[in-house]
Length: 117
Length: 112
Image (cartoon, rainbow over all chains, first blue to last red; front, side):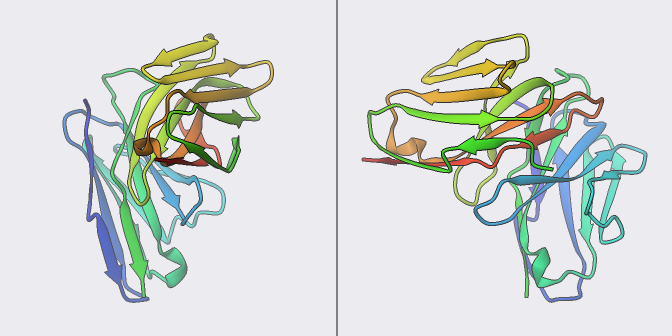
């Protein structure tokens, strides 16, 4: 089946630094990718939808200047958490829609755990 | 925004028993999907049911969908300790991006 990877799988950083998380579709092309955030014992909340070659769309309440998304190729989207603070500590999960596959199928990455000290 | 509500929030059963989880949603959907998540891990896709389907089976899983009531249920039969996980429903509403909106989840514990 289709595989989506995320890198890194976990990261610890100091408050005020920026962290970049990569989401890659390994064996398919993805014009659309999604970024979710999950706090402990809570559900996934959609943060933004990433489109290859154009600007991402952000959900209400998500600061686009704080969570920078770049989807520069058909297999890679990156999420950069700028000036991270402890409240940004969370589990970040991406998913990708196979451009050449069923329109209703998304493949999820394994997630990245961010801890901001 | 969170669309789906799931109940129960937590469910504890003995191995061999059946587990039923329910999901309600608010808007019209194209399909509804169920996912499983082990603690601290990514999501595993279990099953997808389209809006024109009423019931679907996959192994020990049975999913029903009632679009008139905007609800779905996931039944896991003959549960095993390895089924212990969080289960989420996710709805794919109208819109070209095919964004998924996740329910609040049910934490299932299967006791050996």
